[in-house]
Image (cartoon, rainbow, N blue to C red; front, side):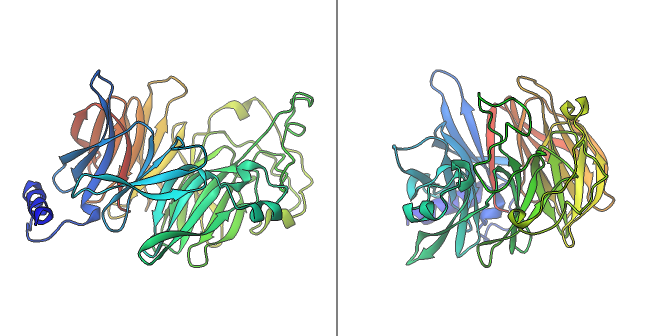
Amino acid sequence: MARLLLVLILLSSLLGCKNAAVLPGPKDYVYILRYDRGPKGGAFIDQYSVTSDQKIRSFDADYSMVYLSVMSNGKVWCTYGANFDETIQKVRELDPLTGKISDVLSHPSKDADQIFDLGDKFYIRVETIIASDDYIQKHPNLAPWQHGGFEVYKKRNGHPKLDSFIRFDLDGFILGASMTASRDSLYVTMEPVFLLDDKLKETRKEGISTVGRTFNENQYSWIGEIDTQTDKVKRVISLDPYLRGVWGIKVVGDYVYVTALEKETYNWDIEMDRTEIGDKRARAKTPYTAKYSDEMRDYNRSLFVFNLNPFKLLKKIPIEAMGRMMDVDPEAKRLFVLHEGGIGSPIGLLTAIDTETQTRIGQILIPRIRMIGYAGHHRLYVTTSQKLLIIDTTTLKIVKEVPGEFGMIAHRW
């Protein structure tokens, strides 16, 4: 009875809800991590109504949360960057109806991040998968970061159980991830890892780790595709000679948009197709020498647009530097790119792209920008260290500003 009363109170508080008899679903709310640095401060999860642009409630949180994900049942799952104890990490669940945060899952991996909920199962993206002893023995040449990937959980008797791991046999970190609209594929961007040994000369070739099976001597990046029906890696696509320093990725229909930090510098005179799709371990090394120059230290100022099938670079859209994460309003056919400033820089920028014409249509200067999230109803949420902005994606106008320090954004995709 108490829960029913609470639901009715929430319904009455939704100013923008046209039909109070219809219970709002998970997609009607946005959850934002807010910090209060005052003497009695702390961390809070603010719940906003997308239809009214109003804050509904605030829930107590803590500073160690690194990512929020809205699940299909409307509850918010929180991942953490710090160990709860020496060997196990946990995922916690916020119930917006009761306001309670409880432990929902223990998992063996380190540095859990984004969660992709597929209904009957879900993926947890992790930096380092601590696999079983048997798994480690079968892959003795893998360095710790090569165990990074996704934990796959399936629901058994109403409870999630660890089913398997998805990982890539590459010397690299997963930086971005984007699901197709049909949710049958998950695409990720991967950046190579480099280790320098004091005994080695600090050259690109000699300073590269040879622990794994992939020898990426030219510092290019990859896109990986996961088949969510089989929970297997479907293909790995080398992005050379297209770009380096890959970062964000966003799948929109049959196209994929990719941001990168480093300007591409390469030699077009190559003897074989370096964009071959398949297992990089089985590919012969291309006999060519990359052209390294001072230009490599310049930031990339292009948004790369690829066709997925077949994989092909279609266009490079001119944008400003430091492009990282992206989100899209599919109805308005607009893609938004977050640009961060350099280390310690207050500069930040938001770029709007028309996904029909593949052209830049607007930019908004937003100092100290942190994250963006599209939440439906033509509303883009933008967090900074100074305020929360709500932007109308059709007019590119700021419709609401909330002072304060804000971080992660969670919305049902």
